[in-house]
Length: 419
Image (cartoon, rainbow, N blue to C red):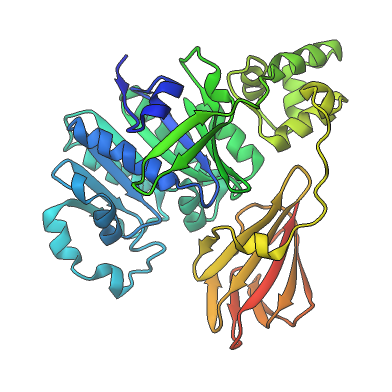
């Protein structure tokens, strides 16, 4: 089995390199500099003269050429799902496109929401490749935003992930942590070989493995703080204060004592029996939400499993602290995460004056309450348009909004709360 470098020595030491056949899913928060992890991996693959296939949903071709200029050669292939997708064939993204296509292999998808077209493009690129291949799917979240169907995104992953494994290729898949349902993420973790999580805690950045197939070392399952230097170098160090918890085995013992099968527990918490099995063997780590649901289904307090003292509750969240974070961009809107725990997710949305957003801010199909803090906006849902004034609430139960629009001359502020 061949081992490949991630381009970051600290990560290689932590997870014992990238194995041939690995599909590496990155679950990322905004502001975690995950782009640098991608860049380092591409540079490492380029140094080994491997072919690189970049499937772009979030970035234009000119942007990719700027970011990876040192690696642009005949072995760098771009499958462009952005220009006709999020880019809407805007003239800005099409400028000099034909000239760029002569310098580098670009496959432009005319209908990126058609996943058959994407699959055919990948197969066509592979027919021109003879060396080991590194794939970058720059955003499963971007794909889902485009096709607006989580089940189709999952179906594509369940087809492509085992296929790349059998080809001994290596792939990076980027997933935004708060943009998908817990069931979707649990199913993805069950299929793939490696899951790495990047998240923020106050002003610190952390990396943690949620799944590592074919490795024996468990060190990576602890949170590790990392730093990004001015030269875009990443330094990873262990978080010594983190407790090593045998969560899986403790939950297994309680499940058996309650005379509950893995299948019965999986049905109670909307997960798969395979996920429960891997969790109990400490092969993967459950998310906070899944962990709380499992504890509730087993009738046990989370504190009894963690064996930790209860931390002080945080009552106050200041707006200045929220706005100090790096926002997520959806079209022209800025999305700031207010909180995300086992009970609620809350987001502050800023929509610029005289602008509109196609679709909705969040892709999760959970009931939501939207409160208009400031401004005037309209929302189109089920082909009906509703106008919101300052102080109004909007309840989203099942149907997803098709468009948000701020026709006013001031920035609109909305608070979105979901389960």
